Structure formats: structure tokens, C-alpha cells
Length: 530
Image (cartoon, rainbow, N blue to C red; front, side, top):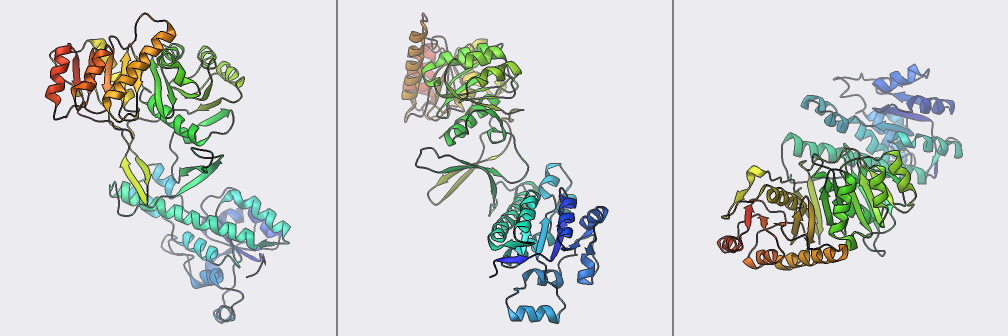
């Protein structure tokens, strides 16, 4: 194993030609002989550089529309031969194979081709074969060969060559080899996923290769004794918290990301609706409201549970203006998420240096498909994301009394919020805002009691004459197994109920609703969120 390897001969074959000409010039200035293929060779010659074609090395023409050009012993022999092995050296001499010391390769743009909606034939043609083969050969033989797959590493390569008198250190080659194997693994993963999901429509293929890249390592995890990092799936980028632009504040923590994601997912349910504000604490909404403007929606959302809102996450579905920003800085919030913010809002938030302001751009589509992952001991659970939607036409009124127009609107609002509350979930809503939220209890009746208690507490703190659950509509994320949960909502003053239905005691629950004079709607859809 040799520490420093002098770079005498380099093979360049890249799809992404950014920085290529400058790299080629600096390598040539160091006396490095350049070998190249197709479009890369053309780009280097246009930059005034002397380049040997790969066909000059192999004595075999590029053929089959470029499908076959580098798959040749004179290429891979020059990459894989160990220079300290007498047998390898003898084989090189016998077959007139010259060593290749540096390989600059990046692969056909498979992911970009898929992302632009190309036809199947074009996608197949953008599966690189020779490139990954050269990358893996060079990376395997990193004792003697330097491999670079990322244009962002060109400057680091040139600095390494300057520092080592035209050579590279073993530590550098190891680092580049690790990146190279990760690059080919990611590439193959994207191809396998496309074949499984898009090409064959398999939601759960026999093998699911997934690779991710780490943009940032976090200070710690859910608790200080845990370590954590943020990873993004390789391939076309999505729209979400992970892609949001952070304008100010210290780095986001694990819990910040988790809670901000919960807030964004919920507020995105209203992306085509009226101005809406969501306040989240520990991944559960503690206040949600829609109004004529963001300021009024924020005030109504905060009124639901101002105690829990302290240190929470605020998400909105409209651009932020000055008055809304001024109100939001009246309490301590960890993060504010918005599609955008005007200059006045940004200036107001800037006074709160610890507050993180995230601008998301277009909100995610709540109806989008996708997969959810959950780790369990020894494995992972996968499921399609809960993108279920209920429209008014899907509802079935099962009671004698029909809901009023306002009760119907509040039922749908409460149902949307309950979808994002940890189970067992009960949500009271009135006039387009939450009146009480009960989350994560072991039985539904306790969730109903907690939501009513919190609503009563909020009324007392605000000095209201009555609790906002009186005349409210209540949503349950799953069916009421007994009438007791429903009767708890009746005691809290609810006048309408929305729930999935489907219990073996539905008749008993319906009878209790009729006796109390409630209107009750069945959705036929459950929204457990564990």
C-alpha cells in the first residue's frame, strides 16, 4: 500500500460537465495525460486541450450508440492492476496495458430523466453501465487509483495535488472511494425503485433499496444522550420541511424538525382553503383556526390552548405580513413556518434571534402518494402515507337530526384536524377553529374528557362567558366502541359528531346520539395516528 501516488494519466467521462474545462486545464498544466470519451472529449478539446480518445486506448471503436466504449481490458486492467503485484505488472506488460491513476466520472442523469417525465425508452437509455463499472474498479483499487465522482470535489482534488507534488494521499483516496461506492449504490437504488414502483407498479417490491444523503448532522436527538442527523432521499427533491429555507435562528433540532413537519403536514390540508394557522406542540396540534386573515386565524388558534402553545411550532398557509408577525412574537415559539413572508414580517421576526423562520414555498399536496417508515426492533414497517380525503358527498348522516350548515362545516374542519392528532384523538371545533383537542389516550372517553377540560380551562383564562365546546362539533379519529365517549362529548356541549362508524355497537351509539338530539355523521374512513 503506497501512501502518495503520482497522477500521470487520467480518464475523464462525465455527464455533468460543470467545472470540467478548468479541471482539465489544471491537470494538463501539471503534466497529466488526458483520456476521454464522446462528449467529454469534445468539451475538453473545445477548451483547447489535447485529449486521447478512449478508442485510441482500446484499439476498438465506440459502438452501439455509445453503449459500449469503456468495457474493455485495457481500461479496467489499467484501473484494477495492483502496481505492487509482480503478476499484475507482468500482465500489464504482456498485454500492453497502461495504468490509469485518476478517474473523473459522473453518471448518466437517470433521476433527472425520470423527473422530467421522459418516455420509458429514454429512461432506459439513461441507465449508465460503463460509468459505474469504472467507478467501482477505481474505488476498489484505491491503493493506487484516485476516483472522483462529484464536481464539488474538483477543487479539493486540485488542492490535494498541489499539496502532494502532483499526487494524492491514501487518506484522500479512501475518502473518495467511500463517496464513489455511495454514489453507485445511490444510483442503483434509484434505478431499482423506478423499476419496482413506476415501471411495474409494485408498492412493496421484494427488495427495497433506499439510499439517502446527509445534509446536516444535528446537535442531538430526541433527548440529549441520543445522536441524530437529517437525511434526504436520493433522487428528485420533494417539497417539505427538509427543503425549507431557514432565514434566521439557531440550527433546527431533531424535535424541531419532527414538530415542524407535523405542523406543515396539517396546515397543508388547508392549502386551498381560507387563511389558516396551526400551532403544534410535541407533534400534536394544540390550536387550529381558519379566518379571513392570518392574524385573526392566529388569535383563534392561540385561544384554544395558550398554555401548550408556549415553545410550540406555528405554521400558516398564507404569506406572513407584519401584523401577524407582531402577534406571533408575543409568545415564545420555537419555529414559524410559512410559504413566504414580506419584508415587514421578516424585520419583526429578526428581533427574535432564537426564533427559526422557515419559508417553505408551495405547500405539499396533502393528496400526494408516498411511503411512511417506522423502525421496530430488528426491522422496519412501511405503509402508504395517509392521504385519505373525505368530501361532503362521502358523509352519511345516521341520526334523526341532520346537521346544520355550520355544524357540517365544523365537522369537516374537526375531522381534518383529528387526522393529525395522535390516537386516540378527539377534536371539538366551533366556527372554523378548534375548541378543544384530546390526544394520545388509551381510551377514547379520556381523550374526550381531556379536550373538554382544556376547553373549559381556556375559557376561564380568557374570561369567556361559556366554554367554546358548547354548540361545537366533535370529531373522533376512529369509531366510538361504546356510547360513553359520545356521552362525554354531549356533557361538554357538543351538538354534532363526525366519526368513521363500523363498531359492533353502532346502533347503541346512534341511539344515544338520537336521545341527546345530536346530529351524527359517518365517514367510513379511520385516521389512526400512532
